[in-house]
Image: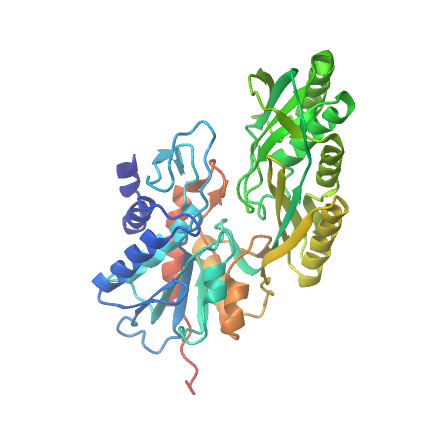
Length: 489
C-alpha cells in the first residue's frame, strides 16, 4: 500500500512521510524517530543537535544568493496520536502505519494516519535534503511530545535557535494562515469507592461505539457526541433499577473526543427487564438526537457471563454519575473578538472505573488564561463535591495573535498571487507550540500553516493529496521571499 504513496507528488515529501510512518512514534515513545532524525541530519553533513529534552535541531546554511535573508526556523513535532478502531488488530509500538489512497485522499487502515504532524516533518526533511531549492539559512526544529503535554516545546531552552522567523507546519486547512492558538490544562479527578458483594443476578455489557470522535480542539464545536457523556446518560438508568456498576472504560487520549465506551453493570433478576427497557428507550432518544451528526453510532446491551463478585456501592455510584453529569463538556464560550472562534472548551476525554478506583481525565482549552482557569475551577468544583481528589497539570499558554506580523504580510500577498484569493487569517482552538516557544524566544515572528487534514486524532484521519502539493508549492515560494536581514544585523 505504501508504494503507491511514494509515487505521489511532490515525491520527495511523500517518500519522507512514508519513511517516518514506518517508524513507531507515539507520544512519549519517540526514541526511534529521534535517532532516525538525528542520523538523517548527520548523513547530510549538517549540524545536528539533540537537546536535553530530546528535541532534534538540524541547521542548514543558506543557498547561494540567499545569505542576506533572515534565518527561518521550520518547526514540526515528531510524535503522533495513536488511535485505532476496536476491531483493528494493530500494535503501534512495533508496526508502521498502513497507508492507502482513497480517491483524493491518503488515509490509514483502521488507525490514525500521522499526517498530524508527519507531513510537516516530511516537508522540512525534503528541504534539508534538497540540492536545488532556494532558501535562507534554515534551523529545522523537530519537537517531541506535542500531543500529550508539549513537553518538547516547554523544555526547549534559550540559545539553541537564532532564527527571526518561525514557520510552524501544523495547521490542518490549506486555506488558513494561523496567527494564534488556545492554551490548555490537564484536569485529573481521582477517587475511591466502596465495593459491595453481589450474588446471582445478571451482568449486562453496555457499549457505545462508532462515534465520529476527532480533535478535541478543532472539532469541539462540530456537535459530535462524547462517548463518556453518552455512557453516563445510560448509566443514570441504573439508579432507578438497583443496578450496580462493575467496571467502565471510556475514551483514550485527552486530545481526542472519545469515540467508544464500554461498561459492565450487575442487576438482580427481577429488575433486569425493566432496566433493559430503560436502556433501550434512552438509546433510542440518543440516536434520534444525533441521527445527523453520528450516523455510525452503535449502542448495544448484551448479557455476558462476567462472574464478578463485587460492584460499586449504590451511594458511591450516585455520586459518580452526578459528578460526570455536572462536569462541563464541549464549547464553554465563543470568542467575542474573532467570529466563529471557540474561546474556551473542555473535553471529558477518559473515564476508568475498576476495582474500587475512579479516574476521570479532561483537557480544558482557552484562548485566554483567565478563561482557561475559570473552567478548570468549575470542573474542580464538580469533582470535589463528589469527594474526588483533583489535580491540574501540563498547563501551557496560548499564542497571542499579532495581525501586524511582517511575515504575515509576505505570506498573505504570496497566497493571493498564487491562488487568486485571500487566505483566511485565523486563530485556532487547537494547541500549537508557538505560544510556548515564544516564551524563550520573545520577538520571534511566528506563523502556522499546513495542508488540509481531516479527522486528526481519530482513525478517520486523512490528508488531501492535492492540498499537499499546494502546501509544498506555497512553502517554497515563502522561503524564496523571506525578507532581508535588518541593516544593523
